[in-house]
Amino acid sequence: MLLNEFLFLGAILFCIGVYGVIVRKNAVLVLMSIELILNSVNINLLAFSLRNGSADGQTFALYVIAVAAAEVGVGLALVLLVYRNSRSISLDELSEMKG
Amino acid sequence: MFASDLLIAQNIGFFIIAALMVAGALRVVTTSNVVHAALWLVVVLAGAAAQYVLLAAEFVAVTQVLVYIGAVMVLFLFGTMLTRARIGAESDLNNKNWFVGLPVALTLLAAMLIALRDGFGNEKLPADAPLVSTQVLSDQIFGPYLLPFWALSFVLLAAVIGAIVLARRD
Image (tube, rainbow over all chains, first blue to last red; front, side, top):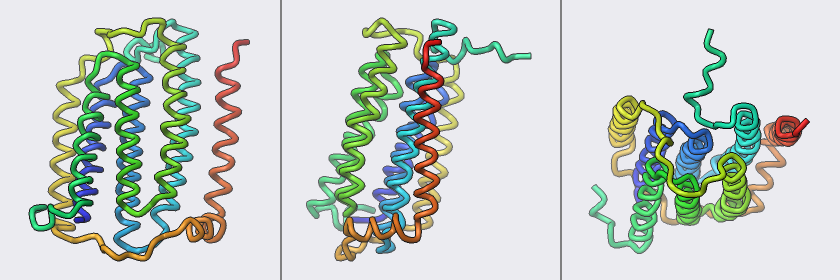
């Protein structure tokens, strides 16, 4: 297997995630796109871990997974709070902080 | 550039799983149904776990299945159902930025693909690399990477407390 196969897959997933973050309006869907980005990073970390024959990449991938889980927990709590206050999770309607 | 060793079984598996993952990811960012997006995300996450197995990282693959497919997806489905009474398709999931998002994503993709092709070319992954066992991984976490592990524990604690404080009703 070539190293670039995995790196290309990670790049494609990363760009799809970036597109989702920019285009989506629903806050839950934006969080899902962020998950896509984090997974593409993990694929890169593990590919380089195998290439270099060291366990550092795998250790870091585990840390990324844990941070992603924490991020989703706090993110969804924030989304729930926004929904309770404004009855909507559309990111375009959160314009109260505009000066 | 992949034709030289396309016939290896691992390569065939890789391309099948990669095609599934890309198709699932595209559906996640284009579908008009939030629950369907969550279920397509499961396809992408399971495919990622399979790729981790191909990359000889079986402990990370199992962790991916447990944490992402087991816990994070349940959180997503809970979030969807707590914020939306409707389960069916919706029309207003996208904002007016698609004409910004598409060029940005395509430019980024082209830049990354060109850089990766120039940087790594046809470099092969070692076929007989020393296997990183779970024992080695735990030695890493509780040895040289102990400080980030502590920091991560505090991050998780803060996330739990923060989520409870944020989502409490009073």
